[in-house]
Length: 330
View 1: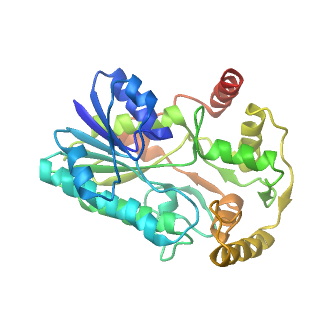
View 2 (view 1 turned 90 degrees about the horizontal axis):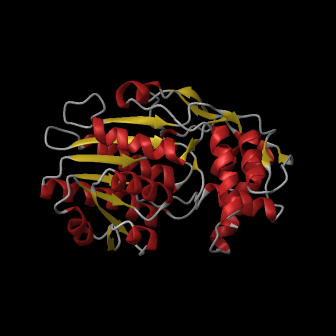
C-alpha cells in the first residue's frame, strides 16, 4: 500500500505516518518543510503549498489512499489564508484523487465545525452545522468537511474524523501554549473551570485514523460520514489543564475571569489586533472565551460502532507518559 499523508510533519500527521511505516506501507508526506524524523523513517517528502494544485497532483499520483491532515489551525485571523489552506487545499486533494483514481480519503476535521456559542454536551453527529461561526478556522474547516462528505460515492469513499483537543508527548500546539501562558502568568480559566471538556490522547487519535482507513470502502457504514473522536472521558477543564501543567513541572492554576468579562476583553483584544496587529494574534477573542468557558464533550458511540474505535490510552496514563517525556526530553 502507498499512502499520502498531508501535514505528515505535524503532530497528528507524524503519528499517523509512524503507524503506516510500522505496517510496512510506503508513505509519502506533503508539507511545507522538511523533517529529519520523516527522513529517518524512509518517508518520501514533498515540500510545497497544498493550495498549489500542481504540488498536490504530484503528491497524490500513484497513491492508494490519502490521509488529509494538513490545515491552518489558528483561532484568529482573516479568512483568506484559512480559506486558501483549508478549503482550496481540500478541493485540490479531491480533484487530484479523482484525476488519478485514488479511491479512499480519510479527512481530519474538527468538532469546531458544529461549535455552539453555548457549548456542546454529549451530542452526536446529528448536531447540525451552525448558521454563524465566530472565527475563520471553524468556518473553513466546515466548508472543507462538507466538500469531503459530498464527494463520497462509488469511485471515491470518504470519511471525516473530528478529534477534539489532541495532546501528548511531542505536541506542538495545545500543551506548549498552556505551559507558555502559565509561565508568563497569563493563564486564566473562563468561569470556574468546572465545564466538562473532551480531549484525545495522540495515540488514540492516530489509531482512529488507521481504523477509518481499514474500514473505508464505497459501501462501508462509515463512507460519507463524520465522526467525533475523543477519549470518551470528559474531565472538568481545570482538572485536565492542571494535569498537563503538573506533567510539565508547573504548579496548578486556579485564577479565573467571569465569562462576561472574558467576552468583553476578547472583543477589545480582537479590535486592537485589527488596528495594531501582532504576529501572535490577540490573547483573547470571544470565540476563544466561549471555547474555554463552555462544555464540549461528545458521544463517540458511532465511532465505536462503525470504526471499531476504542481509546486504548486513558487520560491518566497519557498524563503519566507526558510527564515521563518532559523528564527525558529536558
